[in-house]
Length: 81
Image: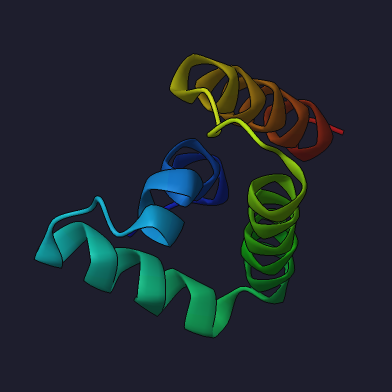
């Protein structure tokens, strides 16, 4: 079963359609059961779309990965509380 931290690590790949069939099904299954991750993915999707619309330059993949890592750390920190 996919955990919240696992989903946070692959959320941008999910949104961008870069996951394999099994990973995508795991994400969808998790999202059906976890309202927090549904909210997280929805917010991330909106943020990425806003960045695309407002930016003349394409989203830097390295920057997106750093954002994913920061989000993953924040989720781990909040899960430890």
